[in-house]
Length: 267
Length: 210
Ligand SMILES: [Zn+2]
Image (tube, rainbow over all chains, first blue to last red; front, side, top):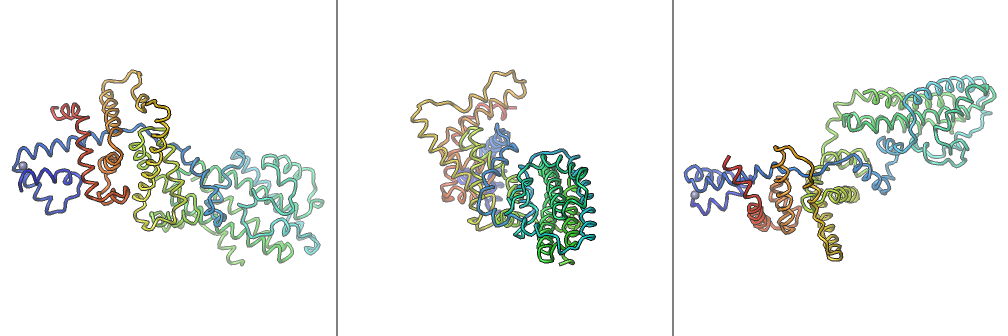
């Protein structure tokens, strides 16, 4: 190989773009030609300098937040509103309550759930007005409930979840279970779960960076499945006139959703 | 239906963790992102935000602008996910979008500058007067010189220099990102190296002597 030929191939050698044969020829020439070897060394030194080049930039979390804001209005999302990931993102903007409030809400919900089931068992189920069916006319999961106005809006639903904490306490202490209608109690319980879930989801969302991506994928799958169950139970309640069994499943599904998120918040 | 409910109740997130490990390949992430899964797109962002933004920075030379254009790149990528034919070439595809976004921005900036006729050099912020430890002084100065020199390359050379020397892309990938032929990539790269060499020569001699 002549020097000129070698020189023409030196950059490609450094770039790793030479095939094996050419690479071997150039290397052989470098071993026996001092001027070409010097040129090669100089190129390597140049590259060392470039590899030490530090740019004055960093990728901040705000950047992703801004991207997410922009893409959240994209049509592609609308078809998949029920996925777990979307659920978390939809809750991202929900008012922040403390972690302990989330736990307290679930404790309260458990009390309400028991009261509701007892009440339904005591009463003739067929006399219960089917307001739940009116409230949830579609098969949408809990993710929808936090933000989508229902066809017959309950005034309470327009308030922030935080504003409902005193209301919940009021129901607990002042309203005897027999005076509250079962659907009211169900709706209260549901709302408390939705709020508690929102708090946890936000917590998890905040910590996403620290969580294993595989875990997150599983979380999304789990939540999607639970949301489907919630939708199915709601449908069953409509079709079977507020069947207490379906109600039990519905609240259990909410409870499971809470658990899944809680598990992840502790992870 | 009950069976299905019970299955959902007993769903154990941790048990399936290992099976899910396969789900984060580029192909899978793209498929999920196409269905509107923001979390999948977030993982794509996490993987590529840094190389993409540093590439844009190489081309436009200004930090704030690079950040803004990185945002634009990923929003555009999200909107065009369906246009990505070969999922294995996600990186090349993203760099291609970044290149377009950066070039568009340069066009706009040039027009603006012609109006204002002021050259507010982006590097002023790097050469501030804060006391610098001796060890990093050379680095800072060298960073500034490299940054300046890249900025002085013409646009085509800047693109290929950044993609090859600073991002280690193959000639083939560079051709795909830039739309240049491979001979042009090689020629521009050779010329870019020569121009850069003239600028960093003092440092090159120092490091060669030591
Ligand atoms: Zn020679």
